[in-house]
Image (tube, rainbow, N blue to C red; front, side):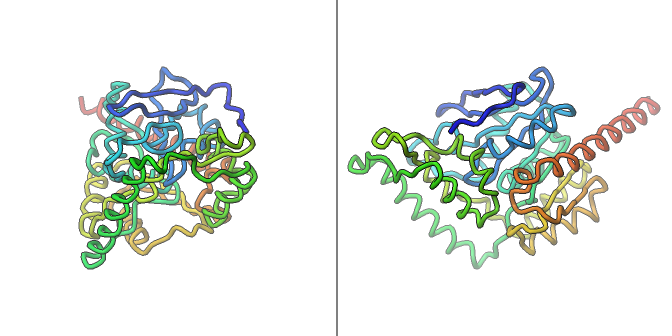
Length: 323
């Protein structure tokens, strides 16, 4: 089942209080990389086809967020939430002593990148969002019901983890069945032949049925509590990013099922108020366009990086002239 890792890719581990954050570093490890954040229920395997195409321009550090991939699960009793993933970025930065971070995120990872940039705008030099700017917003009337459900279900999930009677393996499947389940669970957003890149870090071989596998991510991430911000708060966060004109690229899939009115309004605001905001729609792309259409997405990103490098050089020249 193992997929071949590119020659210039190294497995990394970052120690955290509850265990470790796992990841893969593509390219030069002496160069500060773009930090790549995957989507909900995925892992850093989602960038397995895209990352190698970008290493001539920037190295890429793809991480498994807590509870996903090869990263440690949070302790029993703790609830997964967006802000924990924001804190994960800080932990990575402090591990490598970065003062600034470049962020690329798909879906949930794009929203995490948006949140981090809004909280720490002076410490982010670029944002690349793949089919996501941030989560949809919720009205004040909706939030109590949504939060009640998630909190209650999380208590139930945690109780199962400490129930000795449930100390058995989860349901097991053949690899072909795992691929089909993943394909269908994403509404066929991931092409069937590309499911292996996610499954490489998402399943474990059964000890009871050696020819089968079970999904090994933390089941609690299914009920991750998002940062349920109001439209007004999201707008204020966008203002903080726009004030410093962070170069911000969003690539949308023309066939993506992830779309919301709040993201459309947010994109309009960013286009009007951040001179360095760029949005592309890749017509054939699904929500996982970076995995299915890696070549096309890489070309858009590379052009963005080249434009950003030109902008940075121009700003540096203006600064030197003033001095």
